[in-house]
Image (cartoon, rainbow, N blue to C red; front, side, top):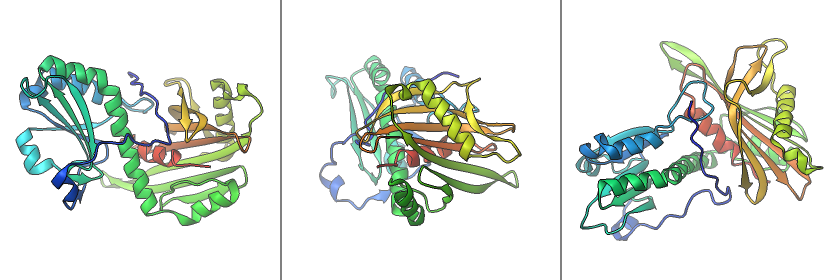
Length: 339
């Protein structure tokens, strides 16, 4: 599987501040966005979509998500002509508009705007004077466009969780760990004490006439910071496996959660986590002594004032379904943890 590496971002600035809407766009009563999570609407002519411009867009936006048990694309792309967009698709959640005109655009540019035709919407305009210029703009700015669309999806989830919070779990997290987080209403608190909390979301979803399990979880632990060497990748992953084994048992006797190293080794990068130093890991988890696995995201964050390292690890399990959006949901919860 190919790995598409995202450029890092500062957590405390969750989304780029886009230019405000003009005139009548400000005053209209906005509808909520349409489309499914992960959908991106491409507004282009059919010839653009079927030619080099479409090839460039697909090569980046359909790249596989790293760490999925089965290959899944970053986004689900929907293409429409400009005339159909104006009639039907203006409220779509994430829109990429290709504009190519020799007379209008002396210099190519990418424009980002929010809430243009719908509340919570993201609109990206790719403006160029020629096909080659548009293709170049796409290739040069693809990482940034993808990062901004991903962040917007996470922000939508955060807004949803904030509007319907799990007040009981939030209160327990504050009491035992001194932290805050956006926890969905359907979540349950499996275990908690002064050094850890395990939060679970269990549901069933219908497919093929049968109900199938979908599980998501977030494990938060903290331990003393004593040396810089604790932030070596090897030390962090060893710590993660130790707490996974301790707090997340499997369904059969002697089974427990651990990191999958054999097929997709975890990736890591340094992040600024709300002005705290941190490291972010993406990869797979597996159940030792059992047959389970799925995607996992983990943040190790240094809380300097407290002298503690926080391990915030989220996972998803949905063997009968695509996992990208379940993974995104748990990532949004993990990124909401603050001290």
